[in-house]
Length: 128
Image (cartoon, rainbow, N blue to C red):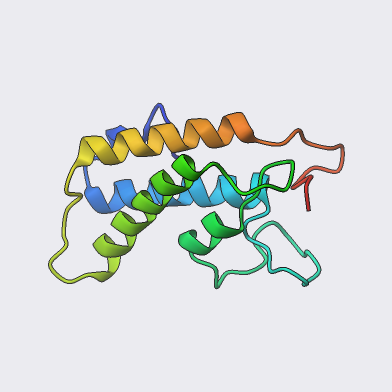
């Protein structure tokens, strides 16, 4: 998958934003319970495919059940917005500041990895 060491190597902006988005979504779903629908029994880590990256950012919580840090949320929302604009907006065909996008991804991914909850023996999300 995409990682801090490899994300900048993608020369196509579409591939870069999709790979970055998928990497963030996986971390949010697997480690911060962001892919689940409240009140619905958990079936698998990605049990609600209708959720977008912005939704997952909003639902993600730390191991203490607190929202993610505001600066991290802002960075991830920037990444999600660039992704959405590139995919959905006519005439938006390139990342406006590629180095800023890569830096924001690297930082967000690093912060998420540092905030990951300890895994229980059962695997999967340990805080929900």
